Length: 212
Image (tube, rainbow, N blue to C red; front, side, top):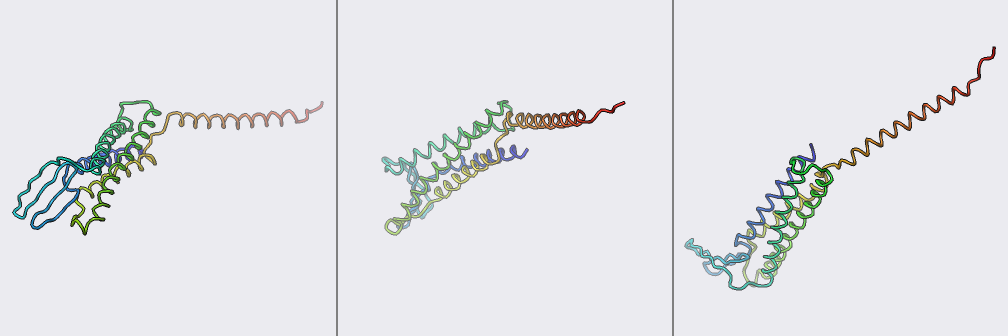
C-alpha cells in the first residue's frame, strides 16, 4: 500500500513537472529587457515587445544563437523523456493491471526513475546556463531573469524529486523475493525440527535398558 501511494505521488509530480517544462519552452519569458518605455521578452523561438500602452507584439526569430539552439534541443529531449517515463511508470505501477509480472514492473519502475532524472537535468542545465549569462551581463545589457527560468527550475526539481521517491520506496517487490523468504523460513523450520528429532532419538538410544 505504501509503494502504491508513493507511485501515485510520483506520477503526479512527474506530470506537473512535464507541464512545467512545456510552459517553460513555450512561454517567451526567458529574458526580460527594458529600453525606454518598451519591455522586451525573449523566449526560445520568439521575441515580444510590451509597450507602455499595453500593446504586445511578438515576432519569431529569424536566426538564433547556438546557446538557444542547444537549449531548445535539450528542452525537446526533456519533454520526450518525460512523456516516455510517465508512460512506463503508469504501466509498471501497482495501481495498474496492464502488466502482471512483478519483475517486469520493477524494471519498468527503475527505467522510469532514470528517465525522470535525465529529463529533470535536461531542463535545469539550459535554464541555469541562460540565467548565468543574464547575471553576468546584467549591468551591460540591462536584462533580468524571466519567469520561464524559474518555471524550468521548479519543473526539473519536481522530476528529480519524483525519481528519488520512486527509486527509494516506490518499487514493487518482486515475486521471487517473497517466495525465497518463505522457502528460507520453511527450510529453517525443517532443519530445526530435524535437529530436535535427532536429539530425541539419540537420548532414547543411549538410555540403559532394564534388566530382568
